[in-house]
Every structure is written in structure tokens, then in C-alpha cells.
Length: 137
Image (tube, rainbow, N blue to C red):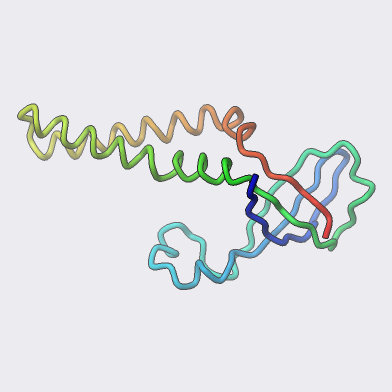
């Protein structure tokens, strides 16, 4: 299966946990939405991994983060695809049933708040579905 790969640096090592940091790619610098998603070029992001044997890693070591294509698609659908479907369904459903635009807009906002609240509540279960492999360079 195809993977998406990104270089990262080990920044912290605990008993069974490794923290790696990586810088957003150059592609984010040309994006018009970079201020909205707070991913300005040069921003460092961190990820924690639970690893049984941390002895083969050291702080400052270059590693690769590999994300399976299915995990990328799942993440994109959860973050963008499903909310778009919710927006369109609620908006056009209420407008088609004779509701006002104000009601439709408030219902859209409420449904998105509910959706993202569900994502937050089930974040641990969702995290298990997203497979990120940590490999040494």
C-alpha cells in the first residue's frame, strides 16, 4: 500500500514514549487558508508515539513518519468530507422543507458543533484507525 512520508526529529524520550517534531512542508506557504488552520510555514508540530523499546532512538535523531494512504483518506474525510456533507444536507434539507435561512444557518452550525464534539469524544478510537509508522532514517 502507498504511504505518505515526512522527515521528523526525535525531541523527547520517556519510558515508553517518543516525541517527534516536524516542520510543515513548503506547500503550506502557498495555501490561502494557512492563517485559518494555523499551519504557517515553519510551524513545528509534535507527535507522541508509544514504543516498547526506545533504546534505538536518541534525541536529535532523524526519523521518518509514514502514513498509509488509507489513513490519509480517512483523516481527510473526517476533517473535510463529512462536514461538507453535513453542511449541504442540513442546509438544503431545512430550506427545502420551508425553513428560513436563519434557521438553516443555525442548524448547520449546531450540527457541525455536534459533529466535532463527537470527533473529540471518540478521538482515542479514531487515533487507533490512523496508522503512523515511525522508522529510522
